[in-house]
Length: 265
Length: 310
Image (tube, rainbow over the protein chains, first blue to last red):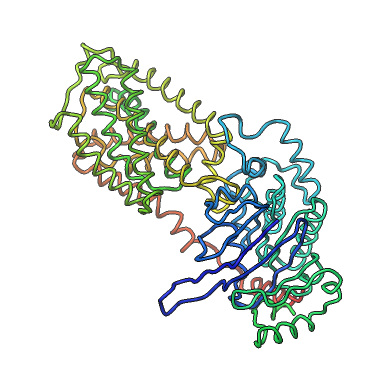
């Protein structure tokens, strides 16, 4: 479903701030893979996701989604294949627009938008049912401005928006990191439900090692812009956080350093 | 008494400036771009209208052509910004400067062109204020209805989201660059349409028409929204509020003139009004917001730290 070949990206090349963010990264995701991604500070996790989304062009390498080479596609064109949830709850929705309008915009991702009404009547009922499944009481607040919702509510709606039009690949960039622990757990459960129910191919960055082990069928660990640990299936289910840290040291020769991961252990 | 006599004129002219302010509302409020093209495109509308009327083109057709010309100038600003990467505020200034030359060209090198109200069947003219108010109200209503319909289409919604959250828009497959160009085209089209009406109302087009139009537009927006947001914060009420803001601005303007203030100083007054409106939200948050009780916020911080072990 996703095939990344020899992806290379250096920020500020030739300056004192030069930073090799992706160093010949290769990654192949099968249809329905739910992959959790962990790694230290500056390991290239977000850079990897941004490269897939097309936020900027990589220096080298190719990205294929569902057999289509998207390496040279602008961000808004790639969006037809991708569902995205950002770390910042403010980033995923339009705050000054209604919940139902946000959903309607997402439902048309990848289609040619026309000069016909932006929200059809039948859609409202459909969205009401969908919002009901979130169990956040949003089904009665269809016309509420998105900006009035809490961070957790926004991330939940953003998840709906990302999966409303079935994406070939769902990208989650530490989407629970900005939430309080209780809300984070709820949003994570919701994520798991949406991903498994729809059998979505998913890349989820997380700073929480336990979550990385609990969720998904495969786990990759990044260091210095490439993958240093890649485990799946039963082997992954058996992992402990200690195992992961040891694997990291063995593979990279460094001590695992991620501010958030350390704080949350 | 003199003030009452001046009132119908102030309302008619205020309606036209309110229409212009709706154009500014689209760029400034919806697209979140401070578009300075406006000072030029309003004059372009006026010049084109004057020339077309002199050629015998009907008044209604001349304002539609003025709209198209304004839209084109919006496209230029949009492309300077999106295709060439020039910051939007500078892109607007550059187009505004270009338009000065364009406008002189349209007027055939002269700085003033008169419109003969007897030779043309004008939509609005200061000799008939009641008629002007009626025509201007109809045009304003048509524009508001058209915008209401457009901004609630599939395309229109993405235009709103483009200004509201460009990151989200791109992630949902919206071509943000295209939308900015489209939005600036609509905005400047409306501004030029208002310029054309203004030329008809005053009976002339002047190369200096429209200097500071953006400031008048912003003043109308702030005055209007300060009232309409309290009544009902929806799209149509906001637009009607902006029109009302334009009318209030022109009533105040006429009042101040009657009080004996020299017209030379009016631009200073407009700028001060807008500066105050722009400053109020900042001053409020900086000096008048209540600090969180120290006890409460400390407890919160502890709570977050203690619970991070998830």
